Length: 166
Image 1 (cartoon, rainbow, N blue to C red):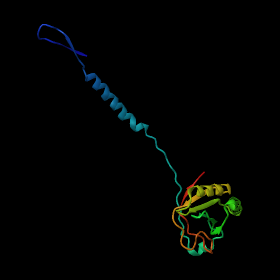
Image 2 (image 1 turned 120 degrees about the horizontal axis):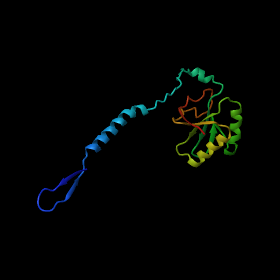
Image 3 (image 1 turned 120 degrees about the vertical axis):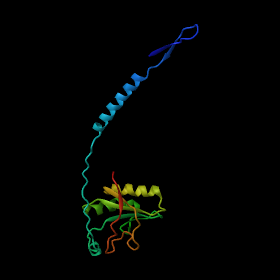
Image 4 (image 1 turned 180 degrees about the horizontal axis):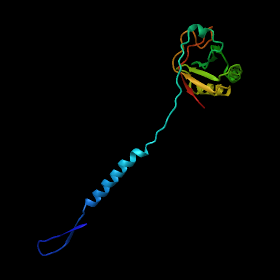
């Protein structure tokens, strides 16, 4: 800290003035230290993603598929259907349990009408989970006209889905 003595007049008093040179030196040294250390603190995370192998499936192969995907549909009038067959809400879990017993996968595609009651749709998904569905995938595109999830010789198109894991 520097001191300035007033040279004029009769009264002598001390006027403090801060010397900022040492402060600037310390700040610059800290800045250089952080600039040198920062690149050393970065961490690399290696993510190994599986390669996606796309295979074109012809319509004839879809027609011959012995196990079409299970599509659970909830209508606006609280109607529940699995692959086009109407199922009473009380029997849904048991019916799905029997369907999944005959299948290797426990994937269920879920489609609800736009004006379906939200609470009822959640109850239907709970019944599906109770019935053995491990993965419930919400359909994001409308089903093609005429398929409605029914396995009428042809399974529905490969649905685009957003999987919901437990």
